[in-house]
Every structure is written in structure tokens, then in C-alpha cells.
Length: 314
Image (cartoon, rainbow, N blue to C red):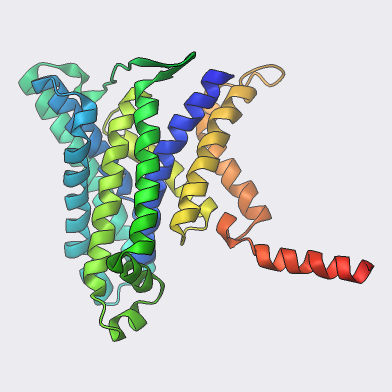
């Protein structure tokens, strides 16, 4: 059971980073970006290419993966989503555009994998995995990738919180996302804020891509597969809250790993092929109970009702 909990922690960290980015981009253009998962695929292939050709440790590729994926995300916002939004494109148009971009990016990644396979004579460009190292912390054995992913997720969450609450630009970002019209009146450069948001979102997805091959075989399709889990995490968290995305990532990641652990054992004996459906079942059940997601819970209202009931009983 200990190994399952460690696995759940590592997987949840990945979903937290991915869902934060999905939520950031959604809050700017009000439409889910279906190309977001491909940024993770790009990060994975950057790390693999540098490791194969130059022997660079995948973890040392984290800054480059963040930069490249962030710049690609920024470029897509500046040259696709922003112009479409300014021309009055509706949600359906923006969504179709994001799907088209996803297909284009995935095709480019496939072409890159084929070209590198032919040029290097290394067939694993179509599917690769990184070897992990076990680190002993006291009497506890933890995979190095899990440790790095956890530290990275904590640093990102804490850093993002401090950035959004303690810096002038972070506060301006929150204001621009919550009420862009009012932010413009106050003299805030909303376009710059949105651009930074998309850069950060893409960069975080690129980081996620480096951790994927430590868990499963990575291929050009892996970003799309992971994206669906990221969407579930963001929606469960409320879709319009970065803190909700963090909670949603932890919730969905833990539910998937622990869920398949118990469902594949007696008395259920379900195939592990059932695993991809667990995040969506969790999403549906959560929304049936809490339609607005976890951050949509009105805790103050609950406390007021509880206090009113207690006063009535007295």
C-alpha cells in the first residue's frame, strides 16, 4: 500500500502542474485549450533528445522544456487565440481552433519522431521511457522522479501563490483575469498579463512532459491522453480557480491510482484497462454532488445554516 501512496503522490503532482496551466489559459480566453497536452509531449521529447544525443540528465532539461513549451504557448496565444478573440470569435470557434492546433502540433511531433528515428537509427523515438533511481530517505525508498516532481510541484504552488498575492504584477494578473474591463480602466496592461499567463501555463506543461517517461512509455500521443485527466482535474477544482486546480489535481490523481489499485484486486478483479475511465467517473460523481466544483462550495453558507439550525434548536 505504501508504494501505491507514493505512486499517487507522484501522479497527483503531474496533474496539479498540468491543471494549473489549463485553468490559467481558460480564465483568459474562456475556452479549454485542447492543444495544452501537446506542450507536455514537446517537453518529453526535448528531454529525451538531449539525453540520447548528449547524455544530459532529463531533470537538467527542466528549464529548457519550460522555456520552449512556454514560448510555443505564448506564440499560439498571440497569433491565434488573441486575434480570434479580438474579432469576436465565439466559444465554439475558439474551441475548434484549439482542436486544429492540437492536431497540427501532434502531427509535427510525429514527424519529428519519424525524422529522428531515420537519422539516428533509434526506433524508440516512437516510444521511450526513462530509467529511475531509488533514493532512500531514512527507511523509506522513494523514486527520484517522485521526489523531484513533488519538490517541483511544491515550489510552483508556493511560488505562484506568492507571485499572485505579494507582487504588483501578480495582483494585476488576478485583477485582469477576474475583470479585464475594469483592469484596463485602472491602467493595467491586460494583454501583457494574458501573455505571461499563457507562457507560464505552457511552461508548466513542458515540465510535466519530463516526468511522464519516468512513469509510462512516452509517445507523440501521450500529451493528449494526459490532457483529458488534466481537464477533469480543472473542472473538479472549479475551472476558474488556480487553487481549485491544485485541489482537483490532487483529488483526481489520488482517486485514479488508489481506485485502480482496489478495483483490480478481489472482489472486483477489473482489468487495468478500466483505469482511464476513473478520472471521468470521479468527475461526474463530483459534479452531481457539487455542480460548481470543489471551490464552488459555499462554506460560509453552510456555516450560517448550521449556526441557524443550532440557534433554532436552542
